[in-house]
Image (cartoon, rainbow, N blue to C red; front, side, top):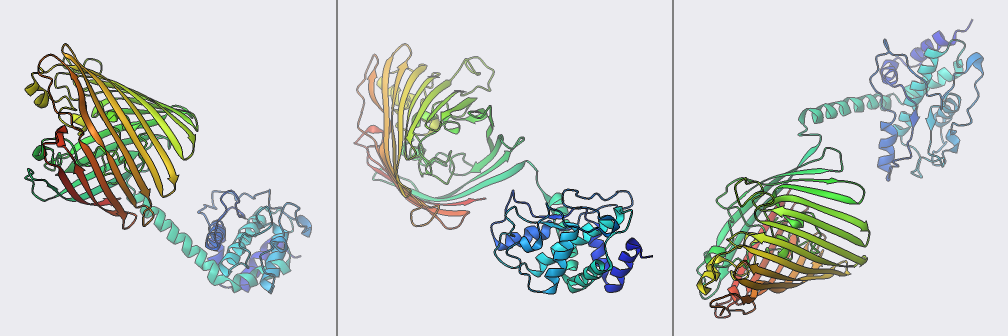
Length: 570
């Protein structure tokens, strides 16, 4: 009497002496071929890869594991009652599969009997083409897996001699492709083992930036030499949940404070200067995480800044002190955001809707120092609140308020590296006026706007006013403003051109006892640069900065700063 189980094995071996290779492949798989539609491939190559990958074998210890049938797509047919299942898509229903040869008909028969393949819901392979031999072999391999499972689990008559002969003929016809599937598995396993052995971290990635700078400053009274300097940043970005980010950054370089010492002013300092002497510093430790769907928090343990959590309305030019944005610090953002820069604190950003957003934070410069006059709440501090309104996708405006306190050094902006000496209420500028060193409290007001005229041209700008009180002496007013024309993707996607016209922070009013006769000429700042993106990782930025009436004194000769910056990002 015909025993379908024993005869099945004998028939296959006789038909194809090389079946052991294919049997090895099929014996390692415990699932039917199902083309998923949740992540649909978008190209013919992706379709082929998906089909092949979903039929690749997986390791299984058959001695200890009983193969399981996917009962949604398969059925054991006892007593030779072979009927197609309603939920199984017929091969003939897969519209882009060409039924032009015997192999198609043979596989179609096996599929409809044993439920080997399920297509896309609309009945196509999503390619509008005939299947390749590798795709066909993948389907055949799925049928081998399915039939073997049915044979093992069947307790009665199973299949027919004709089906097994057809299967053997198909195996012989596509034995090279079936063997290739096994080779691909070996290659993939090797790749996975290599990646597992050599990966740096499953949660941390390195973001690096190296900048080369060739620069010089020119003017009648300027004695500056041409310099070639560099800056390096290595930032580790770690995520624990997939939504949070821990920033840990190492920085070194030789740029120092640009030409501030030689020029006697912080005006025109490069956005990416500091530190000098190639000293390595841990200059940023921040943790950013979502509190809920609308609220995001930023904890700053080192080098805190309001611009790290709030919108500064200057995309492309704002680079957080990096070498991929504007040339100068002033052109990065409204200088009032620099109040409290370098401290420790917390920033919050709450999105009411797509058109309304609030940001607020508190920074204490010296918040990590436990001595008297320092700490989080007994020393320098800066608290900010900002409301952003975006009625249109192409336009937004923001109102900003900061309250600050500084000890006797009285450095409102000097630590941020912008503005004239008088604008910073620096002791070296005030002492000649008979103004003593004293703590300073301040209220700063800012308005920022951004208007995207077109994808390749936008206008942005700001105005800032600081009302400062030199405690025990009197009051002072400091203003700054800027108008910026930006040209994203100028000449090439990823490139950026910009023209910046404005005035860095300068003193306009001083009401204190003693000699208040000071210069109050407008210290204009004009900057133009073009960042050309050579590749995805390399950009070159030539630019020039013109400083008129440095230190708000038109008797001082104008200064021109030329720069050529090359940035490597990785």
